[in-house]
Length: 122
Ligand code: HEC
Image (cartoon, rainbow, N blue to C red):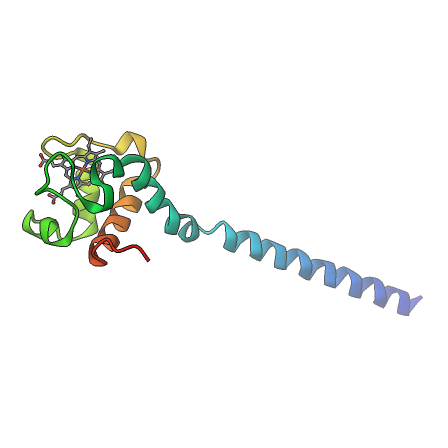
């Protein structure tokens, strides 16, 4: 009787650890960082690339997203880009309504990262 209880206990314990491992897997898969790694790219593709394909600017060529242009226009961090996305600039509208929660930050971080890498996709 006692040994049966012990086996029951062991089975119970291993089921518990499987459950814990599952919870961990679900947690890591759904981590916001994982989503963000790609969602900046997707947001850009859906909402910015129409005018800023590969970091250019089809309407005002000098106001592109390459590092030299950004710096020339006083944009030297992701937050400045996020601000432009929220408020618009010159002939560019605000895109805040289209990007979802934190979308301005996510896409701005992605743009900034691409600018550092000279928009060369790996
Ligand atoms: C309909 C075309 C259009 C779309 C779509 C668009 N932009 Fe722009 N963007 C412009 C224009 C035009 C300017 C220049 C505005 C001005 O100064 O008159 C600009 C300027 C900028 C600048 C400043 C660049 C510089 O060197 O001064 C940033 C940063 C920027 N856009 C980011 C974005 C991001 C991020 C998105 C997507 C959320 C986006 N834009 C979507 C047209 C667009």
